[in-house]
Length: 286
Figure 1 (tube, rainbow, N blue to C red):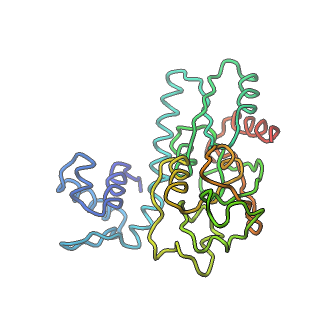
Figure 2 (cartoon, rainbow, N blue to C red):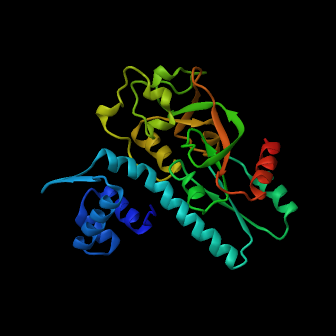
Figure 3 (cartoon, rainbow, N blue to C red):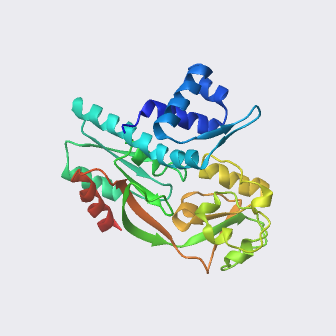
């Protein structure tokens, strides 16, 4: 059975909004049209995707599975369109994503020297989008910090580095030679707990699920300002913590958690020889 990507896009909008009216507005179509398209998709898949009543719209088990698979499918289609368009227009660009604190200058310069006719660009990423750009074709390769979802990616390990706690400068832990992760149990973690699974595994912690999700920040700078002015803690790779100078926060090594790992990621479906070539250069730099 052929999959209609338009219906899949409609489905994702409803699944994210959990409201047909808002999803229709987002898609710039009428609600009856959207409802008919979702019904047609359910008939094609022979599965009910939503349960609805007058108050709520919820995903079924089949709907949750489709949402999990739909996002990478749509990202792949978008990437395909971008790369075909670039090839049709004779574009010769290579785009490298990097997380804050990771230095990519050496690898980019060495790669550019080998390919003087290639326009090599660098794009800064964040924890939330470090692999998204690869899936969508915006980035050819990306320097990523684990953990990431490995699906659809080739990963080349590059290096490891210690992780540190970032606390207010006047905090009880500031100035210590080192701490253990349990010392952070009473604190409010200001980042996605998936980035610090060791903290999530602590049996008792003040900033757990009962305290609600962590505040939403767009940048590391915003997180550091929140640590300095309102409290809370971060767990960051040493290079990221050192990258930002902030006199009102302190960095403390954490003894009992493993190092952070940096890898180079690219789309597993691509066969361009430039990808492993850049990976070899990046590995040699580290």
